[in-house]
Length: 449
Image 1 (cartoon, rainbow, N blue to C red):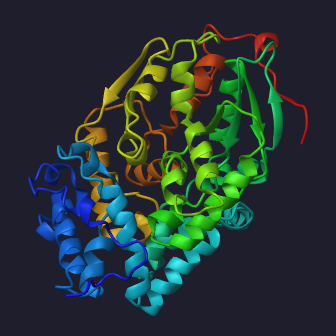
Image 2 (cartoon, rainbow, N blue to C red):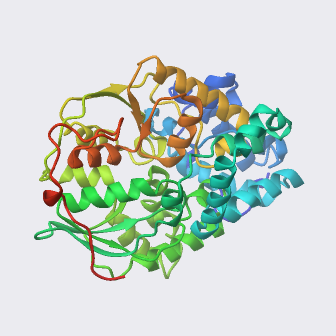
C-alpha cells in the first residue's frame, strides 16, 4: 500500500526501524506519565508512524491528536538505549500533519495569533505595553476577583496566566553594536538576543553582557530577527527555514569565536541549522558553519577560567533542567559547574528532573490542560526542596514554573553569576558584604551601533 505521508520529507524508515519498543522511554515521557496511554508514548507514536508509512492508517485528526499531545521535550532521546532519533522523527511528522489535517477555525486563529506576535520583538513590545497597563491599572486584579477570567476559553486563560510582571525598562531596552571589555579581549562573541527574551527578559540579556565583559569577552550584537525555533517545533517548516536563513545572513562576516545564546529552546534549533538546511544548496554549508559556532552561555563560561571575582551568595537554589538544554543539547554539567563558582551557593537537584515542566515552546498555550498538570507536578517537586529560589536556562520554563510557584523567586543562571560578580544579593537586591567598589566594576562601552 502507498504511504499515507506525502513525498516531502516523510519520517525515514531507517530511523523508524531503530526503535525496538523496549519501553525505556516510558518513565521519562510526560504524556505517558500523565495518561498511561501507549499511543501517547514515544514508542507508541513511532508505531503510528510505521503504520502510516505502510499506508495502514490515514493522517487524520485521530493521528494528529497523539502528535499534538507530544511536548517534543526529547527526554526519550536521552533515555533510549538504542539511540532512536525521535527528535528528527517528530520534526518530520509535524509538517505532514499541518499539510494534511484541517484544523478547527478556533485552533487556526489561536495559532495564527501566537505566530503573528511571538516571533516579532516590535509587536511584542506593543503587547508588553498593553500588559503593563493591564497590570498597573488593576484590570488583572479585577478580572480575577470578579470571576470574569473563568469565563474565558482555557487557552486564553493559560495565555493570561503566563504573563510575566512587565517593566517599562525592559520594554524600551534595545541592544545592538559592539561592547568591549576593560583590557585585552580573551574571546570575541556574538549574542543572540531572542524574541521573548529581549522584551520580557531583557534583564537576562543585560546580565549576559555584563558577565561576558567581566570575563574579558568582546561582544557583537547584530541586527537580527527570530531564529525560527517556535516555527520549527510547531511544524511550520517553510516559515522556520526562512527565518533560519535570515538568521544565518545576520551573523555572517562578524568574525567571532562563538555565537552565544542564553535561551535553551533557541539554542537547540540554532545548533540544528546544518541538518534543517542540508537540502538547500545555497545555505547547506553556511548553516553548518553557523551551527558549529553556536554555544549556550553556560558552555562559553565553563570553557573560560573565571577571571572576575565571585562574591558569596548564601542561598539554596533549585536547578531545573530545561528540556532543550538537557535533552536537546545534552548540556547538564556546564550550568552546574558555572553556578558552582559562586561561593556558599547550594545547588539543589529537583526530583523527576527528566520530566518537562509543561512549557515546551507553545505547548502550555495550545495544550493548556496537560501543560497545567505538568506545571503543578514540577512545582510540587520543587517546593518539596524548600528552596530560596529556582534557576533555569529558558524563558518558557521561567514563565511556566512562575505560574505555579507562589512567592519563590526565579532566575536565569546568568543572573546569579552576574549578581555574584557585582556583589549584589539576588534575593534582596542589597549589596553583599564583600561588594565590588564601583570603580572596579566592568564598564560597558558602546563602540559602534
